Image 1 (cartoon, one colour):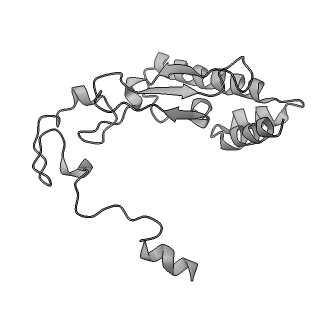
Image 2 (tube, helix red, strand yellow):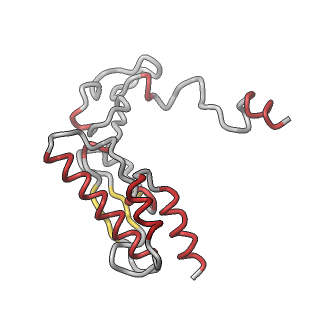
Length: 164
């Protein structure tokens, strides 16, 4: 199937762990299901080993679960453990089956109050008043009401100069 081949190419090409990428490329008959299973197993092994050694795993070389996911809206629900992602396809199944939901580890959550790598419920800036919008609950660094919007490709002067 063409779609499965293209997804397999994206998965293998997007793997950050060079040893895993070499292992996947060395396989003679590699399919998407096998590649997802191997990448997931390698990622879980890396995370487990890092946890056993007491290391922070937020910056690990994992790539398997980040390849095929979509974020589910969590608006209004910013308490601990609210982020849920769907993995497509789930390990051990074929493409087109129902996705599996998994919980994002707390150390991978981006805090809406300060932009840090922790749950918002435990953020020390959660009760502060923003200097930009004067609202309670976040700091100016992450304020959505900033007067300087992030420049997009169309409004970025450097991008427009490169195009000419």
